[in-house]
Picture 1 (cartoon, rainbow, N blue to C red):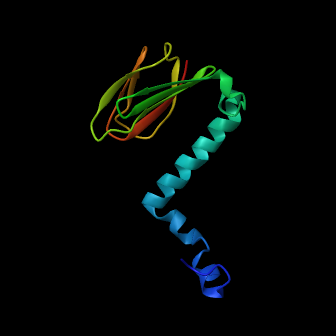
Picture 2: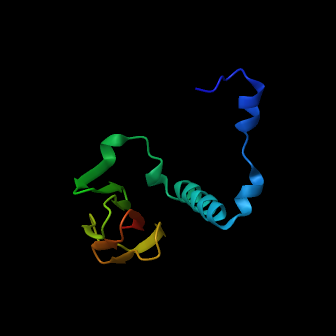
Length: 118
């Protein structure tokens, strides 16, 4: 365990902002910025009332509904088709370009997710 009082630990713990411009880092950075913007734009995602959250766990999958927004996540190492809680009006954000959302289903590649407006 690094000593939190050691100046060397402090120096090693700083973010290297130059890495942000490398392709893999930039992609992850941009994705997190999109998630933050989505939370800001969709009040359902920040509503603190957990009694208004509907969660349906599946076989290494999870579908969560918060008001007019649903998050479908495939945690399995293989593709899965997940039933959405209502008809998807639009796809807001995906983690993989292979995600397909049609009607009330989401076809998700392995270890991927989709956020949809319902």
